[in-house]
Image (cartoon, rainbow over all chains, first blue to last red; front, side):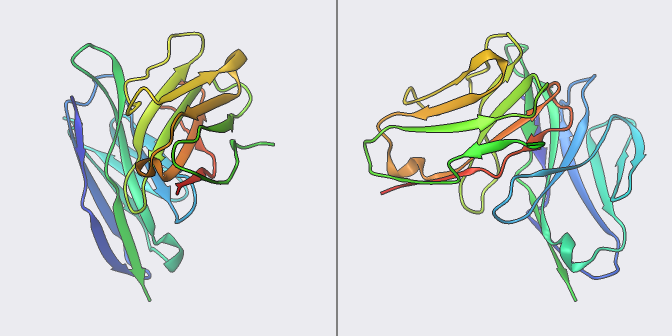
Length: 113
Length: 113
């Protein structure tokens, strides 16, 4: 079964670009890579989703290499309010060929003044 | 409302009692997920409903846990004979399909004393 691996924590400063990489071997061929953001005492919130190459929206970019075994969430010019836990999520198939969603354990990002 | 609604927001129960947690998904979303999150931890998958298909119950930790989804809408997660280790935040999410943008509720914080 696929496993997603991401750094436990990262530190940054306001105005910097932050890149969080997630490794996901055995990702399902036709499935997406999704990133969520979670603040304390709230449910996760969708940030961005992609299948390959690069996706950009108003809050982040997602870079996916050709082999799709990893992805990098890029947050431009972070602010204090970006302090949160960031999760990557991929689709994969288990031993019984059942489709599953595999969550990473989350990266706790601390943005300092 | 426009979002996923969960009730109650907080629940304190005595060990051995049964509890029911409710989730009202976004109208039109055929996929519904239940997750459990302990303090400072990642998301633990519990159960997944997709339309009229048989639910994926592979994440339920024991037979004390069960869930229903009536009429493809509201879902109830039931925990029988609660134990202290059941204490956690229980999150519900809904989406149009698996691994499309999921919207999470605020969660139910369950405390078993």
